[in-house]
Length: 174
Image 1 (tube, rainbow, N blue to C red):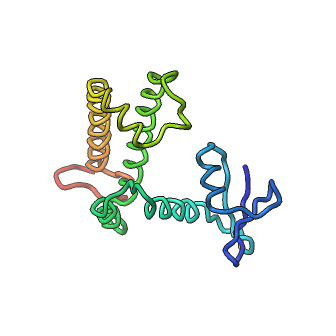
Image 2: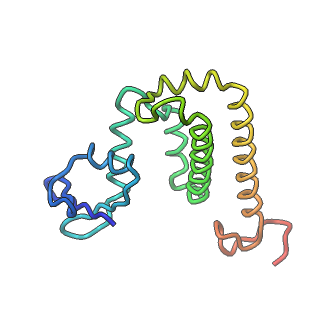
Image 3: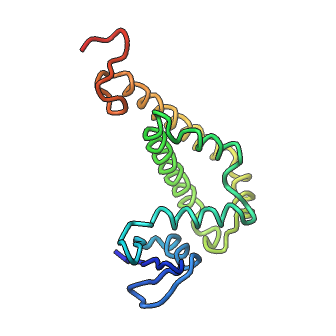
């Protein structure tokens, strides 16, 4: 595991390379699939999520944001809500399914392009030519997403569900 240390002056230090790095360098590590963690230099507190959120913030304020204001507001509404934990798991599983879908598309398109040179605009053009295939794959993706949500909903209805320990839904027996 690669360890990055964050110092009070807000600089990041790569212990493997013995040099200071930037958020852009950390983003490259993410894109390259490198495993790492960010630790506070004084307290050793894990700051990895915080750094990843900073990278997302920079990307969102850049040219092509991924999240709409409406979507971000909805995510914020789940904080402190009883379903907060379930929503995180739901989003994570949905994202994993989407990554698998993207991987399948990449496999089918391999050889047609240089993946590193493919811009979001080029992806959009490629995808528009793949409409029938995409409709089928997205239909499967949406069906899996719906099934996942239904499974989570069923789990909530079971006595002793982890989301509400000790709670028995009305009409059920202990």
